[in-house]
Length: 267
Image 1 (cartoon, helix red, strand yellow):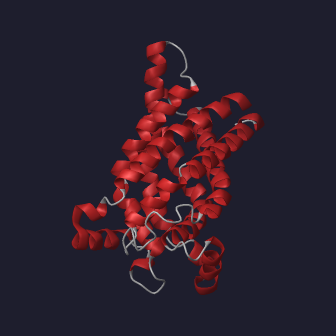
Image 2: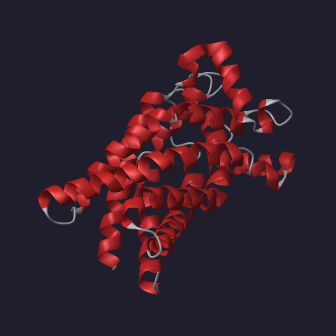
């Protein structure tokens, strides 16, 4: 990856991330409150739907930029030494590595954002200060493992599907897809990946919102999923699926479409 490609991936990813996170923030808030253990209305209902937005605003650019720089770099390195028929495997590995790196920024941002969303009366700054005071820096990384376990399966589905849909569409029309077509492919890939990985997202939310001394706060995904299954059944595991799929399908359209457009312009 040369310097131009690096800067294009960095800026395009950052712009795309901010565009999605800030535009669709209310849907994310509703999803978090639906997944909250105290229930939608006790977590704030439809009030204060922009609670936690400063955290999202600060984290979205570096989070998305880190992901796409890692993703494109890994693709360029592996693509030069692996045959083209193994492209889906390259995309899977590149997306997985991208998520591991991006979560270093995403998780602290998510912890503060989701706690502010579930308790809008506190405010983002107070949530951040309280987390540091009571749990230290590691408190900001509670749920890192569960977030990675959610994001890697999500990316293993979304990005190979996105690349595949673009390749098929390009083949059918005999030229590279336009940015709006890349956005449509991103919407379909994102919606499917979001639906399949909703239980992992519910577990991640419960871990981040749990009290510091609770069993859930230890971050073990499987026990959390089993507990939700026992107490709420299948509906509990898929709580928030409608706003999640809506948010991520729209987000996939904006995120991957914006990324494709900005990346082409910068190159």
